[in-house]
Image 1 (tube, rainbow, N blue to C red):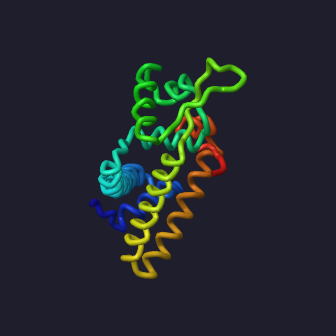
Image 2 (cartoon, rainbow, N blue to C red):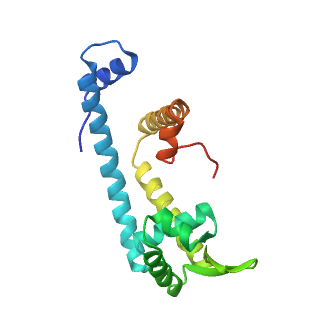
Length: 186
């Protein structure tokens, strides 16, 4: 893991506030180091969670589709294919396998029986709940290794990051939309 020293952090602060000419390069270095550390931590957590999913016969693609269905509710095959950026036949094959495993179900629209929608099944919801429990459990264990001072710094930093995200999405709604960062409720 990369460690950000005080000089790099001071330079990042200077760049943000515009108080130093040389802050740009050091700030970029500090930001890149933080991004690298963060992404490495996320990859490690994802890898450990993926091992458990593989045992349940759930692929990352299946998990992604289940998250889409949870977030967007029922989707037509065409819309799902568009969201996945795959052909309709590819989406159909994915849904076939997921339906065989009981993660999703196909439903015909009563007003137009030609339209088939894909819906998350009870088993699919259970898989997503299990993933959330696993993530929460793992995060509790990881955070349990931090002392009170570290937890307070982390809480403050996360709030700062949340505020920065909100400021960025307010300043540039088009970019926010492109990255899925627009304000929404869960």
